[in-house]
Length: 318
Image 1 (cartoon, rainbow, N blue to C red):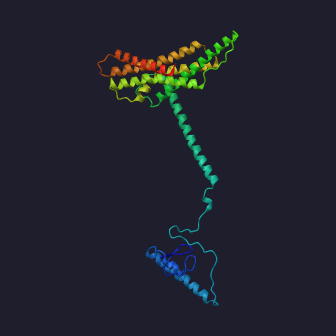
Image 2 (image 1 turned 60 degrees about the horizontal axis):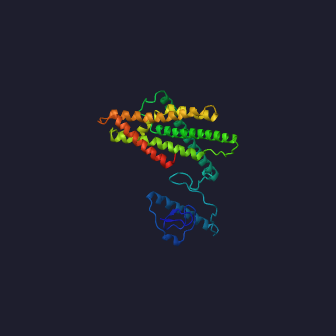
Image 3 (image 1 turned 180 degrees about the horizontal axis):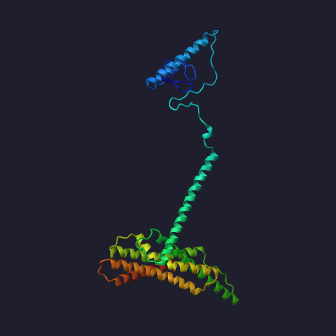
């Protein structure tokens, strides 16, 4: 078999005309590579070739003139799909504008899904927050994997925010006092960089005792609990203090609360974090079979945490 030089249709090697488009084949086309087909296709192609040859002979015998149909060849139905070969529909191809709209709609769907997931996670954390307000130590062994990290992050942000607010209040009061005595002093309170610096310091001060607690659970208590579980257990005692911290910030922004209430809120957060770490450490040690006294383990943990905190204070210049 060979290919027609016009329409690339498969024809016999000795065929002089293409049965599909009627194009005359030259001798140079006979050197093309043959493509094997089944017997049924060869018989049908032979019949079509003979029919075209007979029609061509009749046209040449009519007044000695050759009648060649120069019109566009009609499409031939495909044997596999039973549809015309040239049945290409341009309307099915998306234009660049339509493709851009489809891409934009797909992106909007993805954005909506991300927003929905964020909203669902926020609702789940809020319900968990309310449950821990009622009973902080309930379900302490089955806390969600990331809720503890969210809680510590909120504590660091709100704690440092309240510190910045109170420092601004003190600086503004001191500046006003100097102005009354006739000494002008430009007031430039702490800004965003100071807030972020305070937040990082608070996170470090919270991370140190948690790391010591995790080391204690692995080395002394021989516990198999993960670091996620330890973080969640200690964070369970911060939810009441977190609520008080949020109220103190709102009152400070509104100018209702005084300096004493903010100080009490900060002390409450620090006490809750310390109590939670001591409580969880005590619980792990009592559940273990160690012969070391619980008092000395807690005392040693406190001393190590104090030394590390002193080093951090020296490095940050607090």
